[in-house]
Length: 336
Image (tube, rainbow, N blue to C red; front, top):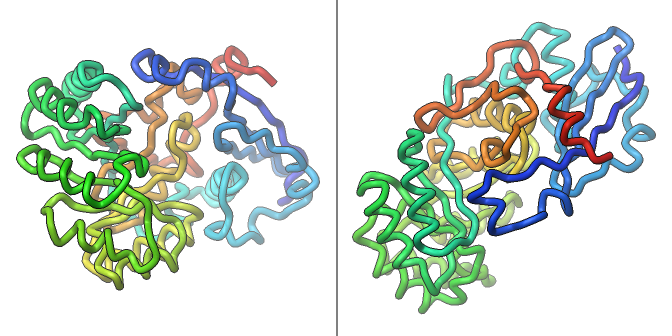
């Protein structure tokens, strides 16, 4: 079986209104590419690229390749998704069976918010709780995070978990600790990347020693994860990459007694959501709700096949990725 040709569909799918408000037009500036990879045996696999990825030169690289001869777990991106889909369909196996041992029949996912005003965060938390989510990750900023968490807790209840992700904007150890201490009375499940990493991880270690709030570096590099573990600078990790890299990184964390959550693709669509769900299924210590966020778009392009229920997505059992493109929707949002 060989790859014969590749169809490309560049799509611009708006975010849901509560997210679109904070990033107007981003979906047009960074459209998402979809692949349909065809083989000489009539099996077709689907894949999804990152935001702004246009797949230049992909035919020259992959047409003629034999999917069954590839080391699938070392591949990344849209073509990896399509190959897992093709090989799974050829063998009659769901994609997770090609990745490792299944540990989860359904995987936890969290609700998500971009930078917003405190009242807007609270409104999204109330909506997330109504939809059954147990955890809510928010893009936090230092000037309103305390008020935000207070209002979110009032809106969604004290059991609603909050992951604070400032993208380093808390600036330094002193500011991060000051904010953490004001938030310790709430259900804060993690601080992700509150300030920049420095050689030796000393400030991250000092943060952990002075507050019970779990600290999470967002890392894909295996050596960086090992150095953070050795420095006692983390309580858990946000990680991802190829299946191979993800399993290595998660395995190191598990050996150190730490959980992980996975970010395969961030604000993506349903194909990446399906792929990320399969990856999550084979990671034993992926107990923290993942950043699989295909539900943040007004259409996932797979007909709503993997919508979360009570904060979980069921792992597909059909061969390959277990989802199919809604081609009517793809054409509706197609821009190239």
